[in-house]
Length: 354
Image (cartoon, rainbow, N blue to C red; front, side):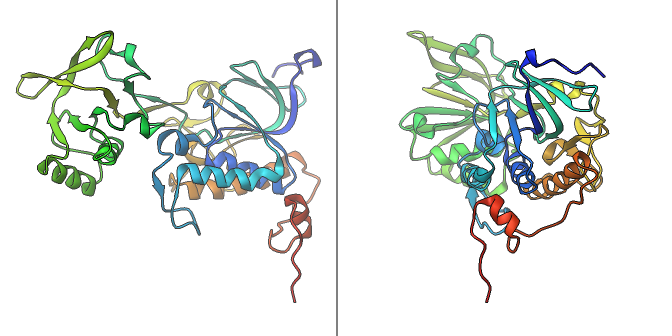
């Protein structure tokens, strides 16, 4: 345990720091806010939304209670509206690099931008860590990244009216291939074998479109490329037969999956099991008092990696943290439907019941 830092370090003093600005991290803000605990939120991404916004902002989500369907971006936007009364402070584009407990029991949290916090509690809602795309292994092709080579689709219109090659055999590869048919000039899907991890319906639709000459599918792997005027002009695809074919293209999309990395979290002295943080199911506390883990980052018997589960975990973690910070105060369960106190906290008028 290190000594308490001095004010010269200009640490932000707070009751709670949330690591991760995905849906569960955002809902953690809400649950803490209802208990009148203000939070600072840190995320390595430059925008809020986590996996939902980074990986599938336009894909539909069907299992949010009372919301028949919404996109990842819509879910994020609605959560931001929900937590607006609590005015959380976001620290984006930075990663937590150090966590150390101080002599007074608080935690010193330091980010990659040297933003410092002194906090009573930490809530880790970091999904399964920071995602890094599995890159295509062709020497020199990385020079075209974010120009003609992409691992994510952030702006679909960028690919319209272009000759697109998509590599991969999972849901992302198939979904985007199907999405771009009719919008791109041409779509060619490349996978190392004729077996897919994508949804069977997507695979069937892809094969139907190939039969109708709306798109193409090639079995093989990218083994080289050609350039013209310093731009990527062709890729070389070697098939199972050993024959290498040249395919002209404007854009190359690669979906080989993402490799989650715990990063510095692995050095915080927390109990880890298979790259996940071990918690109890009463408080969702880690083995370090005052540090909680919610969402996909945690593990416990029966754990299901659902946004719904993360919301439940965030609620219980908030109550546990309140009791941890203020053990002499009774924490009462109140309902947003009927509690005048919560209505005041939320900035809404209390309804009148006949």
